Amino acid sequence: MSSNRDLRKFHDDDKIIDAFSKLVSGGKAGYKTIIEKNKPTPKCSSCGSTLTGDEKFCPECGNKLKN
Image (cartoon, rainbow, N blue to C red; front, side):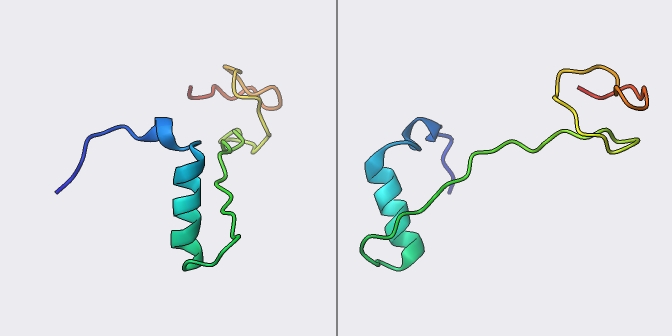
């Protein structure tokens, strides 16, 4: 059984965060779960240089980047 409902709009609701915190902590009071929402830093596949994400070519080695 699966659901196709998009529940992302509820991820910042305090009631949802409290319920998730209780699930993760085993019911401990005062436990606050931190949900990380960071994007991976893009890197050049050729030289490994750190990129901003909007380049078409690597500024270090000139490799064409996949966007």
